[in-house]
Amino acid sequence: MATPVLYRVVYGTLTPEPWQNGSLRIRPALLPTYCRYHVKDADYPGIVPDGGKSVRGTCVEGLTRMDICRLDTFEGMEYTRKIVNVKILDKSGKETGEGKEAATYEWTAGRGNLEDREWDFQQFVREKLSVWAGDRREYEDEGEIHSVGNMFFFAH
Image (tube, rainbow, N blue to C red; front, side, top):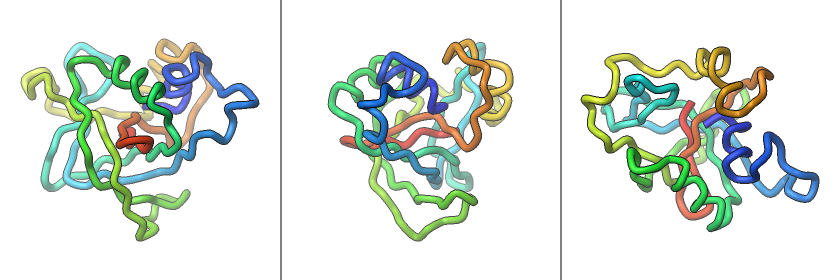
């Protein structure tokens, strides 16, 4: 989930209010043994277990129970929240050696509803982010959100 979409879901705005700034810790992360596929006839992806692949995304810490409830509602019935282990990355994309247990939203609406191609986050940012977030700005190293307790992993 692109950060502006996360903010729109959690805060109702594209950016946090000054009093909300700093309440979330957002870091790049990698989810091993999963792949992110394009959902047929949709702008968004579905991540599913896939042994030889991995999904680059975002680890988000500091979410409240209400934030998680909003995310559950946003993700809907096509996904199930699942506990996973992610690897934290530094800003250059290299593994830091730090692992985290997090929750993610795994696609459960059937593989037949997924295209046989990986979802392209950069293409989403260029072509669809303005529809989902209401803003045309470019966002680097953003992801699709997924989590555990107050920590989520979002694939991108």
